[in-house]
Length: 308
Length: 254
Image 1 (spheres, rainbow over the protein chains, first blue to last red):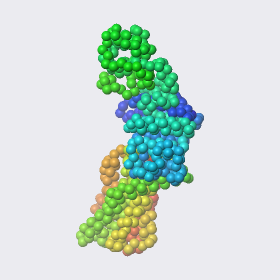
Image 2: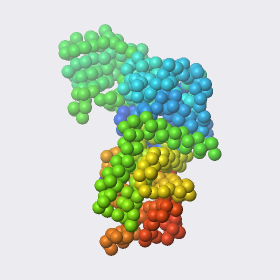
Image 3: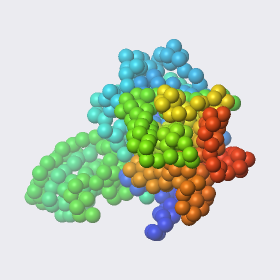
Image 4: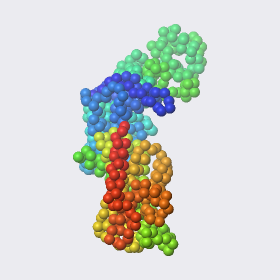
């Protein structure tokens, strides 16, 4: 189990004020589970990643794996930017990486289950420069898992991947995590992925705002919510609240009503004669939860960004 | 031991593969010393002598040192490329000791320099140098030391730099004058008084003098005014130790 206790970190730029990136973060990630660490830019995700992977020195708190310091030899890392050598083949990349872990690797030593699961069998002798973004990510994952780590940390591994590739990658990741009993910490801002992880930790301004399973986090929203797109936000928000709903501003033109059916919301809209551009019922998402807790979206909508 | 040797070997091997797979770099690296020596030796043939010997003969060991210098520049430039491409972060989070990063670069730079020097030596019959076996063995040993030292210097410069263009500019500004004022290009004897002082302050002068003396060993070519061999050896060993120590310390810092 990965345990982070009371982690705080402050950057001290030369010509600017101190920036407190993390403020007493405490969390744990269980073996056999994918724990998503989610937050907007500047929430402290990258700092936490660097502290867990040992590329940044701890200022306060502790990072332990099963009660002891994280050992580099038991750690697998997938970086946001690719860490592959494009001049080398897939196998040469894997072999060089294995040697960094003190392992000598021949093609026959490659774990067949891993290579098959990632679909890399045909690609082993291709230069990395010839691979697509999706395959490069798979090589990254194979590299990280090659030394059979206890802890796998992935930093925004889905950047630049289309949804199909992303889903395949995640499926393999989840299957390997469960099968090997890996403790997997997935750092991402993609709430769609976080929503299907075993556990979600939401980070905002260097502090944890939520830490639970996606189902429990979304429990407070009920089975469904009503999303309304309108230019009449303040008035409709007040009317919905008066009618007993909890209204939540999603963005400059978006409102979410919970604890009300579509029919009940329609009644309020009719009564106020509000101008509605769109209205539909849907399942609640982690984005809704994040907005409810922080007052803003993980990725700001264009209009909100302009307003900010 | 395996935890140190294998990562160093793996990274060294990777650097060599990189070198060999960049055809233009191989052609450039192998061709450059040929062009420099042929043009300068032929160009100054009837207009210049150095230390009483033909200019081409004098210049020959100097160009071999220049090979080590260029090999060091190109080997360590990959430190910046590796950081930019993301490869370095994978090395830094692995259990490989960070010393492996420095030593693999030093070994790769030196291996490339030695291989290039051996190729360049096909011009030996035209150089006027009768290379003896002890002279060859000792000078290759010294070339290895020079390669390690210059690669360590390049590593120190590259470790904190972000731009390959900036690195090139700094290295050319620093290393080329060091080489030109090392006695490789022209001998100390015959230089202006103030220039002699500058040359004697240049640590590479001692490395070059020792290299010339070993390369010309038994060939009848003298290196007039060369510093005492013990002093040159001490400066060479001291420089190698100091630059290696600094680069190892730098790479250990997070």
